[in-house]
Structure formats: C-alpha cells, structure tokens
Amino acid sequence: MLIVNAARGLVNFLSAPQYLVTVALVLLIVAINVRAIWTKRGGVVLGIGGVLFFALSYLDPNFNKVATLPDNVPIVGMIFLVGFFFWWAMHNAYENDRRIAEGRPTIEGEDSAQKVFSWPDLVYVELICLVVVMAVMIVWSIFLKAPLEEPANPTDSPNPSKAPWYFLGLQEILVYYDPWMAGVVLPSLIIVGLMAIPYIDTNPKGNGYFTFKERRYEITIFLVGFLVLWCILIVLGTFLRGPNWNFFGPYEFWDINKLVPLNNINLSEIIWIKIFKTGMPGFWLFREIFGLALVVLYMGLLPPILAKTVLRRFYEKMGIVRYLIGVNLALIMLALPIKMYLRWIFNLKYIVNIPEASFNI
Amino acid sequence: MSTPQKRAIRPSREAPSTEVLEDGVTRRSTFKWMTIAWVGFAAATGAGLTASLRFLFPNVLFEPPTRFKAGDPSTYAFGVDERWKAKYRVWIVRNSDSMYAIFARCTHLGCTPNWLQAQNKFKCPCHGSGYYMSGVNFEGPTPRPMERVEIEVSTDDGQLVVDTAVRYIYERGQWSDPKAFVKMA
Image (cartoon, rainbow over all chains, first blue to last red; front, side):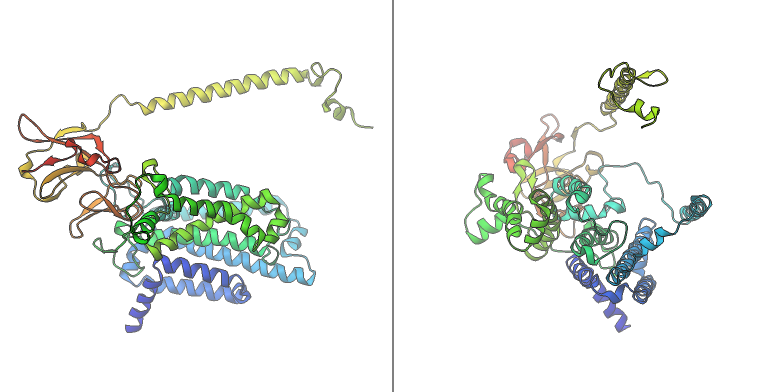
C-alpha cells in the first residue's frame, strides 16, 4: 500500500502542467533519437506498459471517475492511437534509413512495385472497414451516453467548463494568453503555418516514404508542435483540469474548494514597482514600453541574429523570404512554451498588458 | 502531324470568337454561359447570406428587462449576495460603507464565475481567473476587473434599482461615479 501511494503521489506530482510539459519535451527529443524504442520489441514494451498503466489506474476511484466519463473515453483511445501511429511512423522511418544506408529500396518503394486491383481487393477492404466502424459506433452509442442537458443558460457555467475535446489544447493555451491571441491569432497561425509547410520546406527527400535521418529537424519541430503542444495539452485539459480550472493529479479527488495560489503579475508591474520602485506610469505606451520592446526584439531582431549564427545553414539553404517566414512561425510556436514557463516560474501574467485597447501578449 | 481533335482545342490567334470547339460551342458562348452562371451563383449566395443576417434581429427577445428593483437595502447582509445571479446575472455586494453591483461576466472570455465563500473570491470555471470581492482581478489569465453596473436607491419606495445595461469600468475610473455604488449610512 505504501508503494502504491508513493507511486500515486509521484504520478500526481509529475502530472502538474509544468512537469508534464517539461518531461514530455525532454522525453520526446531523447526518444526519437533512441533506435531501440522504435523496434518491434520496443513497441510491444511501450504498448504493454501503456495498457498496464491504464489498467492499474482504473482501480483508483478518482482516476476511474474521470477516465470513464463518456466525454473522456475517446481521449483514452486517442492516447493509444496517437502512440501507435507515432511508433509505427518512427519504426518505418528507422527501417527505411537502414535500407537507404545499405542502398536498398525503401519499404514504400518495394510496396508500390507490386500492384493489386482496386476491384475487388481495395473495395472489399473498404467495405469491411465501413461495416466494422458502423458496428463500433452503434455499440458505442448504446453503452456511452451523450445526454441532452437543459437549455443553455449564460448565468450558469458548468464547473469546470470544458470545450469539445479537440479544442482543449486551445483552452489550455487560453490559460496563458489573452483571448485574442489564444482564440484568434494563434489558431489562425496554426492553420496558415501548416498550409505554408510545403512552401517553406522544399526538401524533396521523404516524399512518399518514411524517413527520420533525412529530415531530422523538420520532424522534431513538427512532433514538438503536434505531440507536446497539441496532444499533451488535450490530455491535460481532459484528465487533469477540474473545478475552477485548477490542476488535479490523475489520482486526486476533484475538490471544488482546492486552493491553488495563482496570483499573477504583469511585466510592467515587475519592472516599475519591483525593480524601479516607482509607481506605474499613467500613459500606456510608456508603461508597456519594456514589454513591447521585448516582443519586437523576439519577433524582429532574433531571426536575423539566428541567421548569422545558429541557423546560418538554414538561412543559406532557404533564402531570406522562406527563412524569415519559417523562423517567425517557429518562434511563435515556441512563444507558447516560453509564456508557460514564464507563468510557472515568475507568475508572469502578460508581457504586454494594455486593457485600454484590449491588447495583451 | 497532330490529330484534328487536338488542333481544334488549341487557341487560335486569327479568329478566337468564332472558332467552333465542339458541337457548335464557341469560345464566346462558353464565356457567356459562365458569366450567367457565376452571376446567378453570386446572387443566390448573397440573397442567402442577407436572409441569414435577418436572424440577428429577432422579433421577440426572451430576456428579462435590464432595469429591475432589487428589494430593500436592509435585506442585504454583509458580503456577496447571489439572489439575482440566475435571472439578471449580477451580484450585489455590501461592504462596510457601500453597496455595489458586479456584472457576473468574466472579462477573460465571458463565462459566468462562481462566488467561493470559503476562499472569499470569485473564480471562473473556464480558465481559472480569480477576482476579489471588489471585482478586481488577481489570478489567472484575465486582463482586467469585472464590470460594475448602475445601482441607486429609488426615491419613491427606498428600494435598490439596478440597471445591468449601464456598465462602470474600473480602468476608466468609473467606479467612483455616483451611480456606480450606493453609500450606506
């Protein structure tokens, strides 16, 4: 019992947003470079480990209550599906890298050399998929209820109020950013940025086959964005955010009166009151000048500096337009974890806070 | 030597408008029909959008009036009173020397916060923004305090009158307006 409680305490501790995101980032970057994880044996160990973790966790009443909610069951499925396809892509990528090193054709190259008929081979598979998916959906809808609730009432927000699961990542971003940023600017940039990928990354390698070695940086950036800054945030929002949008560990009771000190201050308050020990200037442009300068430095000055130093190779390969767009998109993506860490470490609310103009960063 | 069919589709410099593409279809007639089709499509879409805009102006609004009588000031105890939250979305707060009404809308993204008596604060269930009893924000992502609404004592019967349509915003210094609070003797 002592060991079980210690394990529970450890998982609860590590699930706090600041540790979860940090651990996920470090694990991801280490794991994609460790070949043993992406072998068949590694996949089996990971799969069994995941199933065992969930099977044991369901024995905990608090975990069970949250994880068996009809709303949350698909997220358990999502964890395993995303995990499987991540492993599968990396498995094939490592296999292809080995084949390319040996001068042999890739898996996909071998595959497309063989031909099958679309009728009946493909159409039969599609038919079977259709029937299976329909059967699963019917059984699912019978056993997991999606009840109609009372008419919407603006004065009665459920506690916690959760967005649909696919927006829980955005809802988590909203904890750190202003609604205009997290609700409008960042989602638009995610979509625009994803559409811009083929124009920014013109490397023809990896077209039509899995590979890791040939596009190491591109894949790492994508996985950080997709797995850590999207999927992990969805999992966090689904299982670990309880009443009053407080954090609750997976084995923690959802206590509506849990007291979490979340006092936040703006950068302008830190600078004017704590460092200069003067009052806040009245005029907003003067008050926020340091925050605005930081943002301008980050977005405007950092890309040219990087072009001359760390990212020189990319700058020379991509050309100035592609480089600037790509680096700015990457910097905006990185701004999310940066803002998260600033909140966790310094209780920083906004770098720029201009309520006079409803503009906050 | 190319086939006759291929030559027919190739644009010709000499007489583009009369060139027959196939079965009596000319370049000009193609453009004519395309224009009619696009104009028709745009007109139909525009009409549909215009009709949709009508829904923004409903004939009947099932909303309570914004101005209401909130009872005698003496019926309010010290602290936050939630009796009008469900119907009018306001809290009426009484402190040692005044009463004021807070509009129950989080200034982060518009959810309705809850009053947590035990912790003496308002807390939003959507992203965890927190406010003091005064409505001033102190935790979570919200950038500014909640808004107060007009409150006054009626001259005929001494009851409180609250109007949720009139807002008083802290950053603009409006909380000291005479109608933003009621002075208690």
